[in-house]
Length: 217
Image (cartoon, rainbow, N blue to C red; front, top):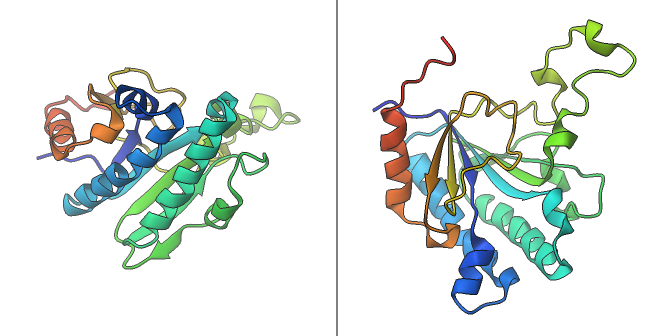
């Protein structure tokens, strides 16, 4: 089986899941933690080299404060849980606003090795595609600078994504790593993220194995 080297994860549907289960919307984020760890374990088992989780975006912070507090706390707890695993952890996001959790700033400069390392894990926290791309070209040098695009990204330490899996039935990227995702294949799961099952992951791998991957060639 041809497996992806790098998988991007868009864990959508936490709020809808909470409402479907008679809970307030902010209660759904906590229920997304265990699925994230289960998915990490599956990726490690299958020899995936890199995973990027979509935590929350700068646009998400426009939501009610009860929800922003909840998803910020969930991201902090997710990183704590991953720190007990074998991973090279990197957090990428705008640290210059108050919405970025102070507890996670220590993971934003360089990858931190936990346990045996084994797999790169990226976490997008207070991430925005516009924030990521804003340094593509120096204003004073204009386009004549001929800078390498990838080296100008805020997310330059994250490699190209091969497969993106999105839960919650929606079929959009929602600003997820626009440069690294340029040739990514996108697989969508109808179930909501807290309803994660192993078969979602393996169905995505099987689907990916049947794609004609040419990178434009």
